Structure formats: C-alpha cells, structure tokens
Image 1 (cartoon, one colour):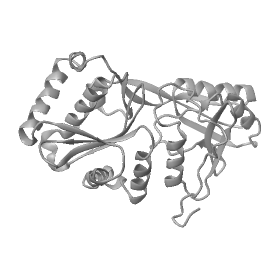
Image 2 (cartoon, rainbow, N blue to C red):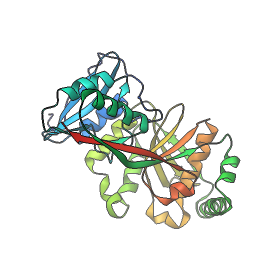
Image 3 (cartoon, one colour):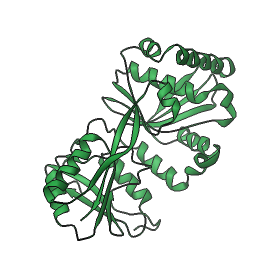
Length: 308
C-alpha cells in the first residue's frame, strides 16, 4: 500500500495482450484501465486481487474473508465479464477451492454468466444462477427524428417542451466534450456536491480521484451542457466505443432544476450519439423510470453463487 492507504501497484503486469470481453457490449468495465483504476481507489485493507491470465484470456477476481468475487464493488461496475477465453483458467481455479470457500459473481450478462457456470460444471462445483439486476439500453436508429418518433407522442412532446423551456431561460443548449481533467471536471464535481441526499455525499475525495483517473483512459469523456453563457447546467461522464455510449455518472445544477437540464442533456447526448453512428446508448444499471420513458429496454444481468 502507498502512503494514501491505496494500492501502489497496478493489477496487470502487461505480460499478455488485452483480450476483448467474453460478453458483447460491456463498455469499459472489463478493460484493464477501468479495473485497475477502481482497484487503486477503492480497495479495502485485507482484500487481495486474484488475477487469472494467460495468452487466451483473463479474469479479475478478489479474495476477501473466505469469499471469492469479481473485482470492484457492484455499485461501481455495471457489467462483469471475463476477457477472451478464460474458461480453462476459471475451471482450474475452481478445482482448487478450499472446502467451504464461498463465491459470488454478480452483474453478469448472459454470455459472461455462461462462462462461469460452464467452468463450475466442469469443476464439479454446485452453484445457483439467478437474475440479479439489469441495465437500460436504448437501441439507436439512424436519425434523431426517427428516435423522437419511436418514443411516442407523449414523451416526444415532453422532451420538446423541456427543451424549449431550457432555451427560453438559458439559451440554446450547447454540448461541449472534454477528454481530460481540468476546470470542467471540477465543475462536474461541484454539481455533485450541491446535490441533495446520497448523490451529494457520493463524490468524496477518493471518488474524485477515481473519476479523474478514469477520464485519462481511452474512450472516456466528460460532456457538459451549457446555454448561452459559461454556467454548466449539467454534465455526464461516460465512455464511448465503436458500438455505443455508456453513461457512467451524471449531475445537474439543482438551482436550474426548473429548466430540466438533466432531460435536455440526455436528449442532446442521444442526438450526438446518433450523429456519430453509434448503435446503442446504454444508461447502465438502475430501474429509474426516465430511462424507459426515453426509449430504453432492460438488459438482464445474472448472479452465480455457491460454495465448494
């Protein structure tokens, strides 16, 4: 551990190339940059990373008080997936579990869950597999007008009405993308601190460090919503790749609540994602109603758990 109490070494030694995730469309969550960043900023004393890797694949696990699970708290990691072909690595590790050792693998898309259950079957270890949670995924059409038509008359009217209200109060909505830390990121942190309830207390110094380091990774971006002036109305940190955009965290100015900056930001982000030719806009975990009003559909995630 370093002087801050956080791990001072990276998880991956670079001996093997980064493999694509076994489950499709998992965004940044199976990448080494994401897992290493989450580990460095959130690991607790007594936790030991267990990195399984060879030339075929890898999986980032964690040993913690007799429990083996996937690295990173499930509130921070929306999708879990081994990378490449890690089935033989997992099978070998499961065969060597001590009697009574527990395991719990959460937030698994269907294909990732299949990798774990196949390895457990081959190792002869009993387990339970069940629905766990879900993400909210919007399949994007080729044009923004087609998207607006698809969400239905009521939601289309509400989205346009809130856009007009924002423009009347603050000016035409303006989306600015930032790809590195700076004043805009500090503005995003300030929006969080001004929020009420758990959102306002979420952005601790440790979380600020984690988001700062995430933004330094390839594909990560901060998108901020402005009107005519310099005041940041809302902002979102997310990740984009060839297939889509993954919305990781957002905040808006509570003083501008009457202008609906959150809805306007999402509409502008969806517009920009369609313009970039992306296939999906992923709201990630959570059953908040606004995600489905904006056209998203649930993507089920699974839990695999048991004991040797």
